[in-house]
Image (tube, rainbow, N blue to C red; front, side):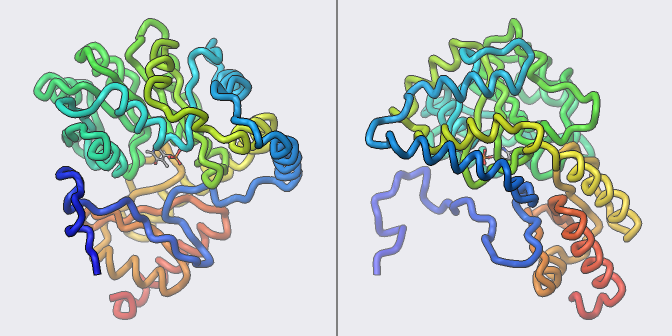
Length: 364
Ligand SMILES: *Cc1c(COP(=O)(O)O)cnc(C)c1O
């Protein structure tokens, strides 16, 4: 039998492990920060109708410039953005990969601040870009001083700032983003995958775009929009940046069906985002109740909560799974991460966890 090590794999891929959160079919799946609310049925019907129209012309290549989608995304974001500022791809993961293809590559590096989104390092490796893991301040915060010191020390070609940060949930201040931008001549990407879950009054990095042509703000329909399965991510930046993306994208990378589905969903933005407030309530409830159970939850601006104070994360993960509750062990000692679900799912998680605390012998 042939194994991976028998193949003439690229050197920088040897020994690597693919991204792989477990995909288990359990009653309560709170492990990959999806929106666990199904999309409203009336919206689903409109999406199907849009797909039905699009399918009639799939003999032709789709609009390579996905102009209607870029216009709709610009309208959704606001801040005076137009279609020229918008780029989209099959998930923000593909957007980030294209950014690295255009601005990273051999001899170049990308700086991030760990612990952060595990895909950054994998995308860096896939594009031959060196990954630099900068460090954070206490409680996973990132001050302008700490971030700038890392930029000056490592002079990266790109900086990836995750705001709020996955897996810690930590919001990032606009001061840190602006300071990083001023400290580098490179590309600065702010990954706002969870922006819609931010506390009221928290400003987006979109407010910093004017006059900063090297600043890119990436977003996704996977989380707040409950569209993870459709694969739609996008970025907002100077039009010159979108021109750079055209140099590396595969022709017609966004299928006609993806474009049709996304446009139909965006036409129902208020209904699609109606669950965001409920999810924020459950997120805040997780923080309060985890603390009451004696754990140490971190502050979160996203739809998930990282909590410390877990004696044996593997055993707790396993014991919850035995009760049909799947959360995430992201490898931080004494910590686990849980997504905010529906009220019922969140209750199921909290009750199962409380049960383990009450009977620790059965949890271990
Ligand atoms: C979930 C997530 C994404 C979204 O990825 P998609 O490819 O758009 O589904 C991007 N960045 C971070 C930090 C995430 O957690």
